[in-house]
Each structure stands twice: as structure tokens, then as C-alpha cells.
Image (cartoon, rainbow, N blue to C red):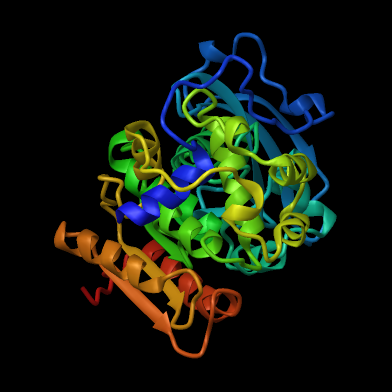
Length: 392
């Protein structure tokens, strides 16, 4: 990551170096009123991926499917035990060790009501209809709330861990009958970040999981550079970068305080989107830039900020997947596809089979529909045991 990119996100995340004041506090989302989501006092007594509680829910929008929601134990970025939720969709006929796809949606949000366990069924998750294509193949689908219990948007490494522990939970949940199921990973954009981190973390964090491949598209592989691209000049997507700063502050409250560098407009925007979903965040921050919400000039990032950015960016995260990867991008993607190409090159050099697909005539919005059928076909071949293609 270049020093200008680091400095840019340093302004967003931490301002000038120095210890946070006692008064500095992240702004957390309103708690979910549904007690199912609440961690029990003894959450630390469960192992990562253990199911704490479960329930069936109406499978609205998924004809013939059965839907389970599982509260399971995981850990946050500080290593503290937390409880998270995954939604497991079973096609007609149940589980029977059929293939399981963990699908990570793009959830660019800060409010808990925006999590997939809610949006899957209320019509607000844009990707929900595509999951019927997976169910129609006879596959089970797990959809984790991969931003976690504080909706820590931007904390991509956390998303990878939550994804892997969510798969563990689905496989350990006896009524789903998925204990012997092979597993595939899929996700686009922010969901691609969680997917990519799950693939990169799995060799050390969850080596027992039988993951056969990952299909990830439109992945922002460096959050510092993405913030630079959406913040140095007024941008229609500035709100997403600002929201990622809020999410990272939630996940690293002592290391990344925002309070001391916000100007009055920044305070107002922070409060307005603290419980918002994607469209509201985009609209609230449209055509703003760093100078509209922060005080002070750019400073070089302190080592703590650099470390956290590197931990949450696939470009600079040292872990390498040991499973086949299908990575797709629109050739005109506003999220720099050439950075992803560099990351895939590093994976190739380490021996990972990679199929990189740059789709002509598509941008970040349109590439998802163009690439998703190829992604699902790629996973079908991995489940069938076909040799993984590679254009390394």
C-alpha cells in the first residue's frame, strides 16, 4: 500500500497518531430487539462454531425450502468470544450430506436490521433470488451475518472468521444433516471480501472443513486504497468509505477512535448513518469527501492503523488459500480489478489454482449478474471432483 493511500485512510480511521482520549467511544448500532441474537453470559464456554441456539423461520421467497437460523460462537478481532447468526436453507428433501455453499452477500451497512438473517426474508437483500438457483441444484445454502453482532462493516478478516465458524455450525447442527457435506464459498463485493478472507484463513483457522473451492467477484482487496479512491475527491460512494471507518472503529475501539477528528458535519453524518442500510448510507454521503467531514490535514498513518489496514486487506494479508479460486471482475469495475489481479498472481505463485475472469463491458454493478452463473458452474465442477482450471 502506498503512503498516500495509507495516509488517506489514516485520516478516516485515526487522525494523527496518539493515544485515544477517555471520552472517545465508537457509535454502536441499536441492539436487535429479538432475544434470539443475544449472546448468553457463558458464550466463552462454547467452542468456535458450536451452536448455542436454533430455530426454524418461514422460508419466504424460497419455495419448498426449509430455513433454520443458528446462533453460534465465534470470536472478534481481539479474540473475545461473541455470538453470531447464520441462516441455513435446505432444499426440498432436507440435507442428506448434499453440497453446502456458504454465500456471503454484500452487506454494506451499519444497522443490525440490515443483516442477512433479516434481509433474506423481508425483500431487501438484492441477492436473495439468486440463492434459489443454488437450492435448485439440490445444494444447501448457509448465509452468515458476516458483519457480526455490532455490524462492523469494513472488518473483513472478522467476516472471514464468522464465515468459517458459520460453516462449522451448519455442519454440526444435526437436524440439517450436513456433517459429511463438501463446502463451497461464494460472494460478491463486500461479500467477496468475507469470502476471500474465509479462503485465506481456512488453512490455519479451520483446516478440518472440506472446502472444495471459492467463487468471489468484485472484491475490494485493499480498503485503504478504496477509501483513497472514494475520499480524496467528492464521490457518490463516499458514504460507504465513511461507514467502513465507523465499522472498523467498532471492531477496534481503542486503536481507531474517530471522535477527535470529526468536524460538526462529520458528527452529524456519523449519527445519521449509525443504524443505516446501504442505500441510506450512499444517499447521506453522496458527493462528499474527506475535507467535508474531518478536521486537519493529512498525516502519515501510525503503525497501529497500518497494521489494522493490512490485517483487513487481502492485498497485504499474508494468508494464502489452499483451495481453487474463481475470481471475476468487470473490466470497467470502479473497484480496481488490477489490484485483484496482483493478489491472484501472488496466490498463483504459491501454488493455488486460480481462474481470473475479467468480463468485458461490465462495471461493478453489472458484473455480478454476468459472473454469477459462471461462479455457480465453477462450484458445481468442484463438487463433481473435476480438475480445477487455472489461467495463472
